[in-house]
Image 1 (spheres, rainbow, N blue to C red):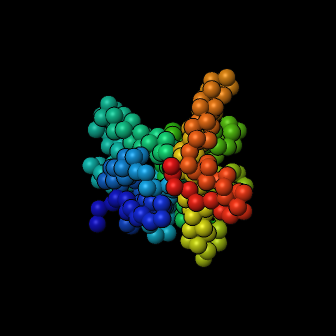
Image 2 (tube, one colour):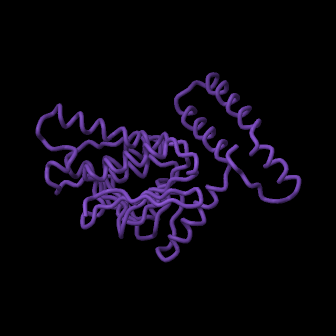
Image 3 (cartoon, helix red, strand yellow):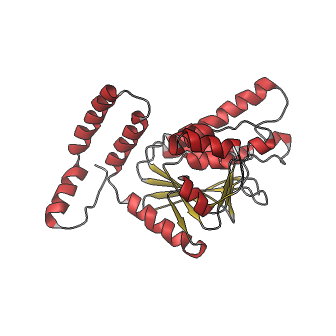
Length: 264
């Protein structure tokens, strides 16, 4: 079976499972092409409120499939220009994931290294099973890093911790990854699926338009001056205030019940 991404949908939650059997879900070009297509579909999918990225079997993804035939690799050594063009196109996949309007969650079920870690870092949130192990891995392969891993890590962890992880690569068990700030929670392996379901259900119950506006705020806060940011933040706040969901939240508060959001 060729490598790819398996999509499942239900209750406002879309799960994208990376699949490259026997290769610990390493990134062959067919897997990356599949992922790019899936993310493109989700960009305009109003029915999806939460996107979960995970891996098949016992791994999340160990990054580039260095043992694949050249035709299935991004970096093939045919020419600098050709390798650069392919890698830049692949890099836009993590940008697309990072900019999805829905909440994105990396469910790290096992080994997560190199470009696989970059993909996880592109998500809004990360949770891990106890068995998960993280490794930046690039330097050990004589490489400098790709798919925005350092860009994401610097913003998530800060300069000092990001430099430590990338310049001194090594195995980082799930609990240590949580202590470092790479993941927000770690679940015992036997309850990981149930804990993931509970978290995604909670996220999916949020007001979709408010989530999308809040994600815009989070992106803008990293790149705008305070004055410019306050302008766009105010626009989004007023826009969400004038939604049915905001009115529903106010009614639910007065009626002492949980709100039911429709995305209107």
